[in-house]
Length: 125
Image 1: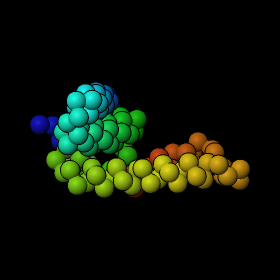
Image 2: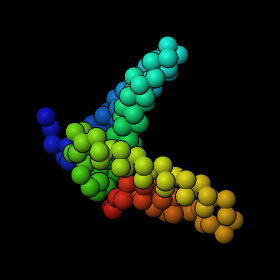
Image 3: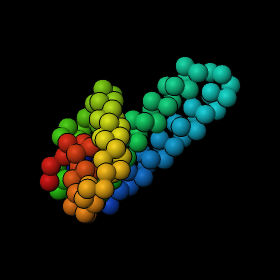
Image 4: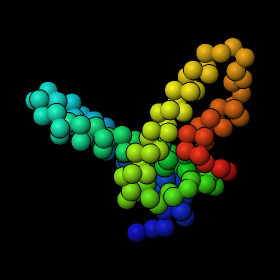
């Protein structure tokens, strides 16, 4: 396996696309399972969909700028707890962003937008 920290932008992008496709498949599976009232299995696939979505986002960020520092990048591929923690932080940050976006005094420059996205994962460039 290649070193996850040394991939080309195109390889990060390919990984992001694969993870997003996996996320969509898990989500579709969860819908089918819930229609058949197999709720525990549906929830399991919903969690897997969320994990794959987090992985897709992190890889997409690296595909845009492979100099972006993502702490514990390699652990996104083997540590469920990390993905769950980052998902919770991402949802909270998006909620805060949504709440702040309603305030007219909030600046919407491109730099501020990128800062907000990076803060979702506590990333530094």
